[in-house]
Length: 316
Image (cartoon, rainbow, N blue to C red; front, side, top):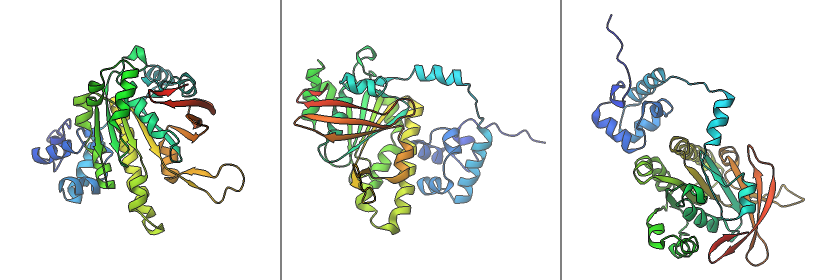
């Protein structure tokens, strides 16, 4: 009886030749483990495989992938090794347990001019700082879906942090997307960029803007949520694989069902609610002040921090 072929590379999977393997790698599927958790229909559309061959490849990848079990102590030690990006405000850092953590998605939602984008600029600069200065010594991938990226803000914040403004701007790779397909592809194909450029922070500003404008009405809600779910899971996969931080901003709507209290609700429904590791609600106060409430976190209690937005960035 012939010995079964050991599956270690994409080319070892049934129906996957060198050309198809290269296409898969270009689209972020660069390991057998990633094929094991992929949708056969998605692989079929992506690289032109028949659905049957895609199903066989996924099944073979699942058979070849082993599960590893960890103890609570193992995970505790792993969490202690996570990186954190300082927000530049001690009260906000304390609220987050030391700053924006890696291997996680942090969502900030709020109305217009609540400071969500300004915080993204500060984080984009601080991520470049050395570890002992509150950074991750890495570059940034900035997905701009609303045309809000302002290099002038990066310049002024970088100067305040005593960084070379030109270098700080060059360390931020900006992708301007105008459709959901572009937004999704910018993350689907990000693996090589993340590796080559040492990306340690991914910013999506904003997550839901294009999804809201393209998928209108109840009839489109199912497709919207399905695509959104896949998109967010890819972000989380990048965060886990490369130990990087993800910061996404989100829009809000008024919930008419809430008769008392603040009716402001983040859009995206349960998909966004479950996907975000940490959720921040930002609202405008007097003049430069912004109030940030920690709404959801797996390890930190709810609370609030007051920050100030200045020309030099975020301050207490």
